[in-house]
Amino acid sequence: MDIETQHTERDRSSRPSDSEQPSDPEGPEDRSRSAFGGRISNWVPGGRITVVLLVLLLFLLLVSTFVLQPFQIPSGSMERGLRIGDRVLVNKLAYRFDGRPRRGDIVVFDGTGSFGHGDYIKRVVGVGGDHVVCCDEEGRILVNGQSVDESAFLYPGDRPSTVPFDVVVPDGTLFVLGDHRADSSDSRDHLGSPGGGMVPLDDVIGRADWIVWPVGHATRIERPDAYARVPDAEADAGAASDAGAATDAGAATDAGAASGAEARSARAEDGDG
Image (cartoon, rainbow, N blue to C red; front, side):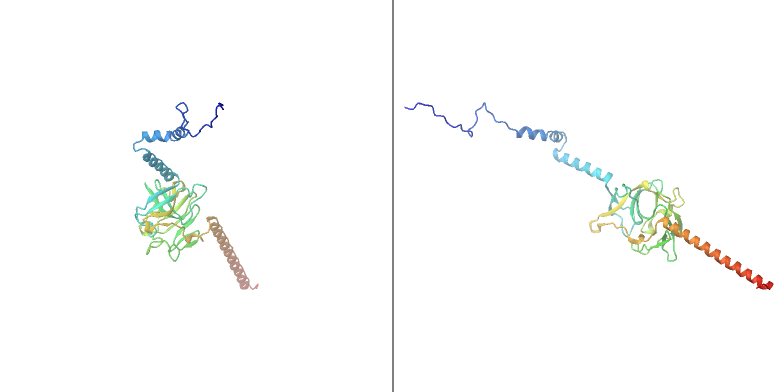
């Protein structure tokens, strides 16, 4: 009789005894990952939803402070492109990395000290060093001697300016005008004020890049080609210098010719020629 004990395979799927409680690694790990968020959710009224909304609000605040900021158009000074009530997004990084406003840009700036309290939105017509004059024989504004056709964005029926001016824009400033020239308080109206109607670059908040509201009027704001042919201020000064030299040379030649003619006439009267 075989009385040898039979060894049986341990059933590992069997339910463990009370002394062999299995570990549950997922529980403590889940609790550690959400402990901080859980404590905040328990402390803030509204729980997780409130926390998510606060994080989103903080993100929007940072974007509005350093990247993009919405502005509402308060007046008709920039019609026909920007209408009263339009919301525009202003790119606050456009000029923060060695970039400078260019002729034709629409900029938002703090008018304190130059225009008055509050923020203003205008189009850049002249940058530092530019010679801006109103007007040529056809009524167009000249920048560095180049006539500018602004008909693509001027308010219908408006003239480029009914106020004559002749200014040189100081370095580090801008000469700005509204597109609705007949309904715009701009650099022309402050020529006799401190600062001469010029906007310091440090007061520029950013460049208006998009109309975002109303939806039917939403579009990207492009820089017009009207100022593309305007020469740099240095080139204009050089051309003026060359023109002045040519004029002086011509005058000297004419004077010399006149002097020679007078000499020949005198000799003829004396019988020498």
